[in-house]
Amino acid sequence: QQQVKQSPQSLIVQKGGISIINCAYENTAFDYFPWYQQFPGKGPALLIAIRPDVSEKKEGRFTISFNKSAKQFSLHIMDSQPGDSATYFCAALSSTSGGSNYKLTFGKGTLLTVNP
Amino acid sequence: EPEVTQTPSHQVTQMGQEVILRCVPISNHLYFYWYRQILGQKVEFLVSFYNNEISEKSEIFDDQFSVERPDGSNFTLKIRSTKLEDSAMYFCASRRLAGRTGELFFGEGSRLTVL
Image (tube, each protein chain N blue to C red):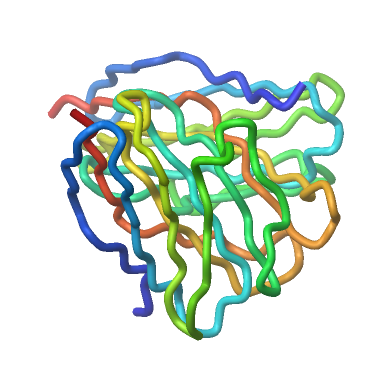
């Protein structure tokens, strides 16, 4: 129930195309949904995030779509660029058992390659 | 820009040896975490730490693992007797805000190789 399922595992897109990565969850205790971008040899870095009371959030070329009833959310990268090539992780935030803290549960990641 | 720093960047150790991974979180952050990532796999939660105590730990974080904040700046992860399956990238993270929207900042990781 703590899992966040992410697909696809890898994605190849041509420059200028749209990259779409999907995630699904079951635990209704999750209440905040960030996406992280990770370049080789680096730690994950926050890209964009959404609250469950919002159906869409857009920041530049990056958009999160959120479907609360289906427990699904997705990342769309418009006009994909070679510099976007990285691993993308969806994540979900929940309170820790004692309620004093929060923790992130990550999906398995999607390796995005944008060809020039 | 403030950042989470981790040392060492790579450590190679023999099975059964003790390892200490060090982290310096961002200075005004209050919540600290360790995550690990086995090569090519997802980032897994190990432990969260707040107010000088563990908030939550995962099933991975067994008795061989411990965390400590020995002074006002360092946050350490100790693996008492390493196993081959402990080989992974270990990420330290910190956040400032108590609320759910506070961003989690990750360090660049410490790669642990157990032989």
